[in-house]
Length: 238
Image: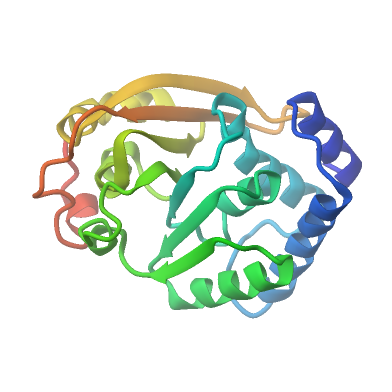
């Protein structure tokens, strides 16, 4: 996906990028590739692939959400900033919090945010399980996102405790989303969630099948969740 195609495809979805926003994506790509030589951020480094499989893929979540008003968003295990930072570029009024367990990635993200001139973006080096038990963050976010982090059985326990009641948990998943959802049905309900919808997406040019899972937070998550670090992955709530 060339830059021009990226801009055109977003415009078709009602997202008209300014010259400044286009420039931010160019800086994002260059910074990602530069830092990837020093640390493992992504296996995808070819420009057209980054624009399609990282930038565009991240923004697809907005196709099914109303991001026109100021919202607080927490991105769990964002890695190189996906999906929250491409969304932040497109919707600069959002307040973004990123939590990641690897200090090197947090260092990269701080540098990237500075290079992009982003405001109202904060980064925390922490395990998602510990972060979600912190009273300053627990059930404080309008939206909580996760992309390519873990299966839904695990993600639900990491993410739903951070979502406000009446907020949403957004999971960006691959072709096995329906299977994962079925496995996670018990966990989602236990943690206060309810499936709103599952949206299938085909990336432009038949470059892959994706799904956007939207979970509504309908009640408070029981205090015992998430369990201590490592437990959600070791013993998923099935």
